[in-house]
Image (cartoon, rainbow, N blue to C red; front, side, top):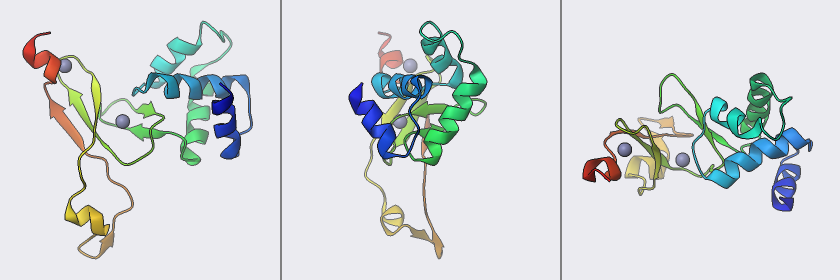
Length: 136
Ligand SMILES: [Zn+2]
Ligand SMILES: [Zn+2]
């Protein structure tokens, strides 16, 4: 809990109970959550919070590079507290999102392609996850 407050303070985020809760939900779950999922988790503790408030908080966090936004689901953004470079796998059967860590290719190591500078890249993989494949 204190860690979270320190982390937010270090990023110049003004501490409010709602902001701490939003970050806590993302940091604790180590998951990729939609705004609605974050809302569902916070609502029991803070009934006054609205979806719009959560959006605003997420925008502020994103600006400070505290969270990342992924659009692997096309129509819905997901958010996570992990901000280092990694890819994602989306299971088309169960809908789960997995973090994928693979070594960047030569192009990415150079951070340049055809003279263009690469600032970020998110690889999205689609398929059937391990669990769904084995029918567990
Ligand atoms: Zn699956
Ligand atoms: Zn991730």
